[in-house]
Length: 352
Image (cartoon, rainbow, N blue to C red; front, side, top):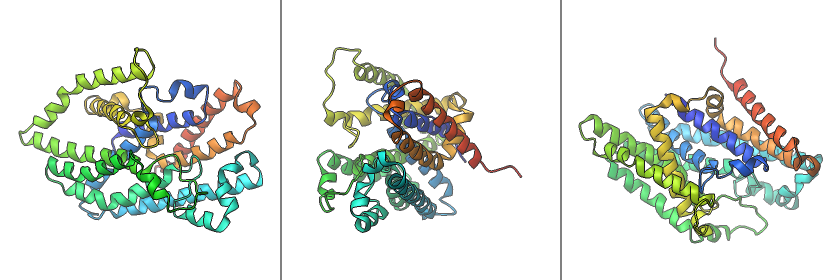
């Protein structure tokens, strides 16, 4: 059973990511507009959260969560088709973006092989490979979460995820990337940092499932603690919002704390509290965040995200006289969002 509000929020995040990727002037107002985090963190977190809900509902019929491996394979096919199509288009008639595929053009055989293995990921083509990896890993980890009967078991399963994230803050990715040729482009997202976002979403869903079960059995301690924390969460979010936009006289935090590449500690804390507030709203007033237009986009997130990559590459291939001047740099991003919504509508199954 899908939660409409969560699909709607995922659709909203897709729209925000699309507008952010089109650049200024819209991204000036949208990118990290709520604090030290972007729409990407919310999307990864919700993907893990919704994935755990799906794993729980499918656990009886599919205890090994084989559906996640099929989803990973489908995502890999989408990624490879997009990569092949864009690299060929850039070579034939989009020379402005050809430099992004230099690793493939200069090393056709090995570059293609590393791309198939998801090690070589040009700009904007580095997110779907992460989903493939997380889905494959999740097909082995999620069954453990679904079998957890106590909240402390969820915590124990989450600790290795935390350990990887801590290691990511101190160069784990660079150490692993050292085994590959230097010409490979590994993408902007550290998988050891971003797995923390995805699996924390899954752990949160699993922990809350147990907490609600305990509440139904008469033990509402955990649920009440979360509810009592809501005012503190709001205060923290307001503080981070004011700090990130320099409305209060505090020096900006060092990049270590707010790194997007590695998901810095402050960045994670800020977005995690934001997602807790969103979850609280969804629990109490689900209709408040249920938007029909973005709901359909959230249900077809893979198609929408893949199409948005193609649109971004077409935009980057457009001459600067158009990209950096109005009204095109406002009109085109808005039209792109409408096209993505139309694509999602076309992907809806037709009523018999």
